[in-house]
Image 1 (cartoon, rainbow, N blue to C red):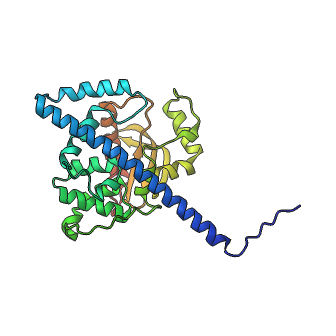
Image 2 (image 1 turned 90 degrees about the horizontal axis):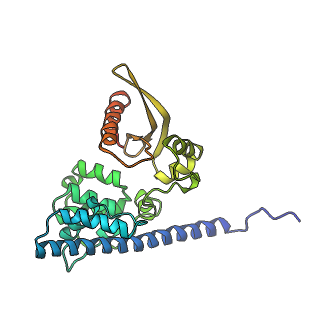
Image 3 (image 1 turned 135 degrees about the vertical axis):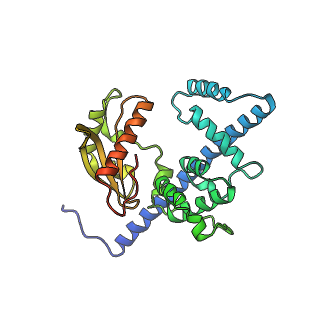
Length: 285
């Protein structure tokens, strides 16, 4: 018997409604998990602050905490010394009894780290957090708006902010529900090298772009750069249509090192010199 491939009246609207509800539920679930993570990080930061104040402990205790927490929870990320220091700053920025006010509780941890790094006052942090939710800003867009001092041009007051959700289709919603990036579709061995990862990503380029988020366009793979009569090759080069900047990806199958950071800065300068056009912002990594 041949199946009926025609859609009944109203089917398209039904499918659209269900998809919308699924996406909204995903954002709700992501926000609930995000609030739990922020509560944990705030509590850890509070404990560190209080014990350092009471015992007079210095910064070295954080390094020891990091080592022992990572040993105790080997499968859980977030316990680096750098992140523990962010937790301490986070608790200091939002002291009790107000843990983290709306809308700050609705943005991911990486957004909070950006706010702590770039802004000095709770009012400014709260303003940018509200705008991030209202407009669905990713971390990169948030950084760009802070750099442009948007709050000074639009006013800093935040009053009667509604408890809204970020748009389900926005970059912010994707970062809440997908952090960190997951490339499990590659089916690679744990000891795969950089070229194997690169090849796998390009074989699944559509899924790779979806994982990165909206706005990314692939420029090339192993993009050639000639600097001072020497040849260099970028693993992957993208262009972000919203940020209007090139994005460099240098794949590493080992721990991050200062040398890797220097190399990335070199690549960014070379891309800026060769590819950036009028209207483009500075390249990103």
